[in-house]
Length: 278
Image (cartoon, rainbow, N blue to C red; front, side, top):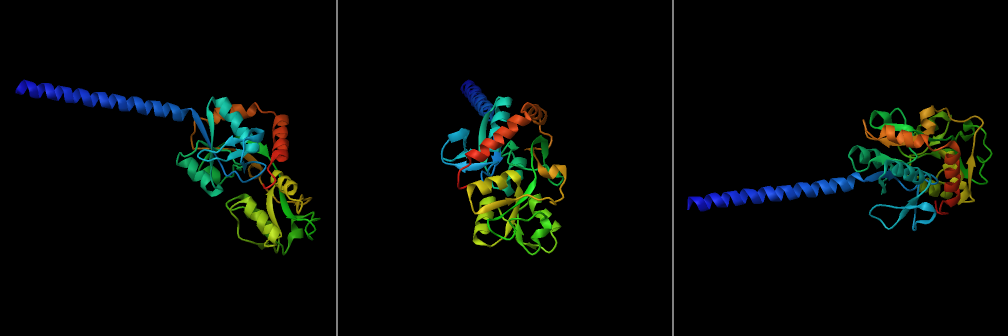
């Protein structure tokens, strides 16, 4: 009886060890699969940097867990980075305000979303070298009294807004006597507000301004002779990474291999290929 019990115990321990071994192997396989992906967060609503479309035309990439695709300048940069890392690109569509939390929680590996490496953001996440630099503009309705503005001070008394949690919104305070409206979640919402007359203009970066005026003949981009005062980091755009990320140096190396001419061509194509609705 004792021998039978001993044999039973040995068999039981062997079975547990076997199952544990299987579990370990399965976990490793899963981990290897996950390690082969490069999950990039963007809002897919900030043309020409990023947008949503129904097909994969012009190099658009399928959005994870969706039937939709994402295209734009950021997506093209993300493709080059993923290729350089030897990983499969996965686009994770994320609201602007949720991008940093998604990164710090590990839901995404990087933010490539037209994000500026501001000093405030650098407290929470790291950034690579810049992959684009732009200027601030104002988008207004065609035929409005602000269409021919040459200085930001020409917007005294104007109803102006910008996107929530961006430096675009903070610079509005540089306009004396401006009617600063509540910040909005995204650019499509600001365009609707502009069309309806809720606002007289919104602050944006030049590529988005070009995009807006190209997508809708009722919009005009205003560039200034006397514009907003900004820092170099404010008008630059970089890849956001988790603090202490081991990817920073490698991604900087990949970005350095993209010439200024290539970056200009990628942006020009993004503006040309953007869906009309964006």
